[in-house]
Image: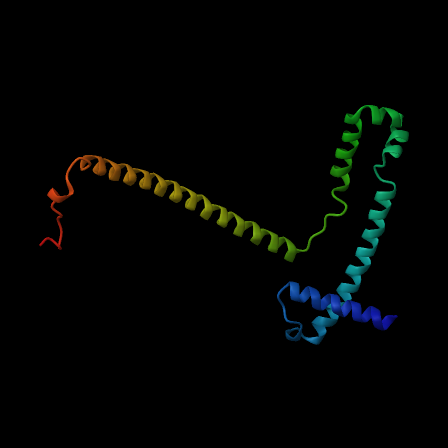
Length: 168
């Protein structure tokens, strides 16, 4: 059991070093030992946090507990949705999102993705504006071409003298 626990700790340290962009081979033995001790403490804290979350899920801000503590019947909570929404808001302010956890690496990746999406959207807006400008230019050129065609519509083709390099 201790062997597998040590392996899990070592694996967790290596995974987190990778997330930090550090090669485990570049870290000296003493620092690795410190990281393993820290990881054991972190895992113990995570276990306590899981237990606390389970307690909150099982007890904290449950509608029946609030009903009993406030003296407002549960039926009143169901008949007046505002009361239940109020308790839900109070719970989210006090406890936060119980399941919301993200590592710095995940947050950095998400922020990078958002930045890339914003850049892409900016490029899309510019491309759409350029497309609209070109569409208007095409309309103007087609109108000018139609005017020229109408101008020469009645003229016999034999009497039109072409201008340019190939005039013979």
